[in-house]
Length: 161
View (cartoon, rainbow, N blue to C red):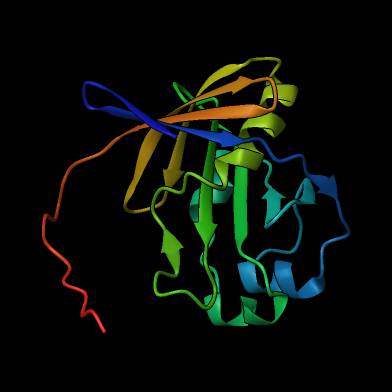
């Protein structure tokens, strides 16, 4: 479900609990790192880094991630105004790094809510192109708010048989 308040759009998604996993060597290698705080998994891998600078510095080999069969999110506690930061890599998809991803916050929000002891947070996703998200945990749901701009309006014609 999506609601709008001014320029802010809010998505209402189910929250995803993550489980700690032993990181496959290929995962760390594809990210170009040798260590991290922890690796967790829900639908996707979630790699928790020590700090925001490490998240920003990652230069992944997206093609090397293909054998993992999952998408990969990296995250760390934020600095300054942000409670946490993240990046989301999509091996095998048309976009190698998604600038802002609603669905990955289904696992990020519950994780950071527990770590930071907060239910409302401000997050930033992306490296070069990205965006800010207002995040809220409400029971087994997450509310993810971001600003959006219309970039295309059109019609799709389907042939009837």
